[in-house]
Length: 105
Image (cartoon, one colour):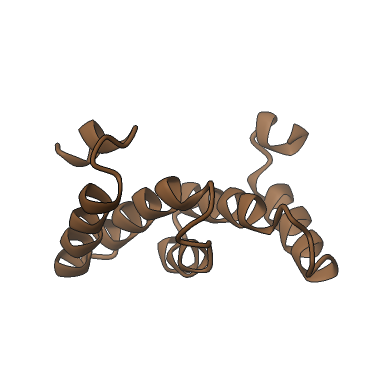
């Protein structure tokens, strides 16, 4: 968390990947995968971020933000059809979601 606040993106990636590799049974895996995906997205590594978002549980607490991240990454990767499908899935799963206004733009 300190590395995130200091904008030490590469440090966040390394620390998070190390933790995930060492703690396979951690209850915080989805939370950390989201941190890792968001950081990779911020670094412009949209393919790696998209892969990480897809590993987050669709029924967990991070599902809504992970789906938003998928839309963003797919858009940046020029995969417009897939981005629209993910956007529509977001509207279906989260009709009153906190990112709805952002995705309606």
